[in-house]
Picture 1 (cartoon, rainbow, N blue to C red):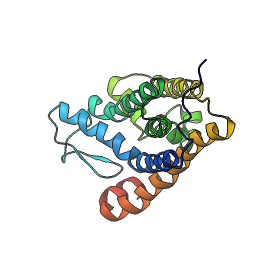
Picture 2: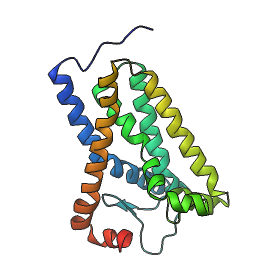
Picture 3: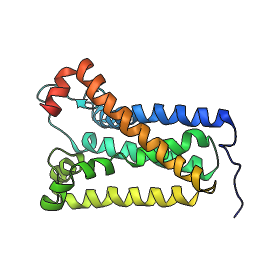
Length: 203
């Protein structure tokens, strides 16, 4: 298999890689919420969003397309990044985008692992809401999202041919930026710019 151009061979490549890791890490949650907004807007519902929550007009019930829009839009963005990686295009942007967007649901599963293991669902999560709205078993959506995550990482790992250290950095750096900047977004940006939504989520 032909080794692709080592796109981390120049300082400018590293600067771009770190920059895009930070940008995607910060905006990953709003991208997910934007998917919810798109879903509701397609139904003619004027949904809006904060940094980490979609907002519906008072009295408006949740709808399947609006709830599913978040996870599905995230997967769509991740899939587009995988296409760029496969074509060796914009790799300093595509790798952080694919890595971070693939983690959108999995990190939440880890945080809710006790409920998922015991109850086979986590109240309040999109997958549980989607299952409730359709009358399906919630496990279907959790399994489907997990399989997408695993497939994504198989495809990412298959494209890592830059040496052990760089391969690890390609995966680890975006994850660290995502964890740090998403936490900053929720506990600083959301808390101070959207205090009502923060209270709804965290009390």
